[in-house]
View 1: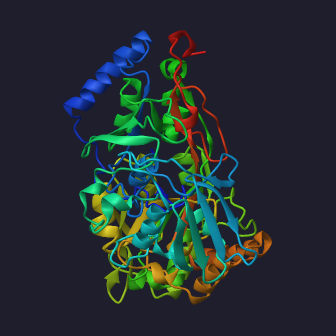
View 2: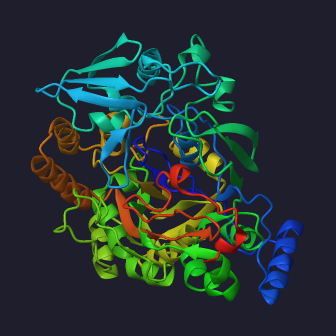
View 3: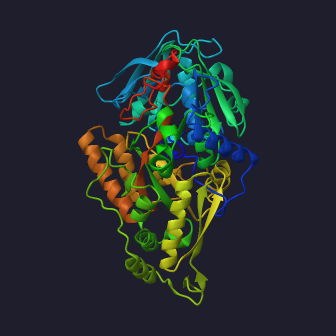
Amino acid sequence: MSHDIKKSSFPLHLASCILYRNILSLRPLTLYAFALITFALLFAACVKEPPVKKTQSLTTGFLADAKRLLPVLASDSASGEISGLIFNGLTKYDKDIKITGDLADSWTISPDGLIITFNLKKGVKWQDGVEFTADDVLFTYQKVTDPKVATPYSSNYGPVKKVEALDKYTVRVTYSEPYAPALESWGMGIIPRHLLQGKDINTDEFNRNPVGTGPYKLKGWVTGQKIVLDANDNYFEGRPKIDQYTAKITTDQSAMFLELQAGIIDFMSLTPTQFKVQSEKTLIKKFFQKFNYPAFSYTYLGYNLLDPRFADKKVRQALSHAINKEAIINGVLFGYGTPCTGPFPPESWAYNPKVKTFDYNPELAKALLKESGWIAGKSGFLEKDNQPFSFTILVNQGNDVRLKSAQIIQQDFKKVGIDVKISVLEWQTMLHEFIDKKKFEAVILGWALSRDPDMYDIWHSAKTKEGEFNFISYKNPEVDRLLLEGRRTFDIEARKKIYFKIHEMLAEDQPYTFLYVPDALPILHKRFKGVQKTALGIAHDWHLNWYVPKNKAEWYK
């Protein structure tokens, strides 16, 4: 359901809501959309219950399709969310944000912190009936560290010296140096040796027909339309109470909201407008439950630092001063968010409260641009070396919030003499043809973050290759050093000082304009019970907790 760049559920994922084609005018309604609108209007007039075809199933709205479901390759949020239901890691977070066992039953850590010995759960079966063993853990490590495998997660295992399968149910991991995120890194989904040995996992059909150990198994995948999962009857934590899970792909949030009203989907993330206004209708309030809490994420305007214009720190600072964040938060988010000051949201223990957001100051922006050689030209826009300051911001198709944010930014930049165009692109196209290949100037994206503040993959200069997460090509030797120091430091207070400094430095450098920390605004059909609002949101371990009462009279109590 999430469509932000994602560094949650342990591995980091790129959000599937980043780019858009240049579609700023209203498009003609398709027959499908027209039918949905007609149905929704008739439905609203009668205030009837939306039809539920399969009561024991959950259908979630996705803005983009998944690409690859192998955990070591899943870098977008759709792929990450689906693969997270099919596979398990050795560890996971519990509802109180404490690391607990998943496929690992327990573990011990040596006094020097350099050796972790995992005791694996016995009797866990892959979905084809073969037993999960330590050999699968060893195989996963070999693949995630193989330079031939196009994974963005290899650096999470860089400090590992060796991994050994001591016996069928025991794995020993030896580190060359202390590594604070070690336990979290083993949340990576484990993959089966017996099905992937000797195959090129980058291209193997397993990416579309995976077999895991998780609570759900793949039933079908219709590209661009839906992914259907069935409950795993032999899941080691117990069969999920919800029989079937469907990821319904709808690339427009307005159309998705109509599908919610029509009973086609049960669960989605609302836009601020939908949350504040449209979902307040009697129809919605009667049959659906809404939630509102701070998301552990942020949205930003990222600049391609290989572009000489954006390589200039004064220019980036000027751009940040030119943007009215409050106008975005109040006008687009309806107040459901706060200004972002840097790479950590306020909920993070690594958040530095002394770092302030770049204030809206167009005059200062103009002065900084002038200091960098940008002067008024005949065209009415700033020029340097007879070239106008003009560039394109990419946003992803279907994300109205980002599109509206881009439009405000476009007008703000125009006020200081910068000509900006907006290009709206389909997510996978944007990600793989533009972002990965660095064929962009600026882009509005978001990071959904892990609870551990290790940001090596996003900010270290070693992570700028194609498909990696430092796609803006940020390079700062001191930030590189601090990122490594943060990984090697176990004491929380000592780590906090390191990340406070990183926060300060990134706020000064402004490789992104850090825009806002949004609120999560999910909506769910009321027939689902057992829903809890935890520190990790309402969907944490939903497969273990959610259920639908068989007595329909209990649905709307």
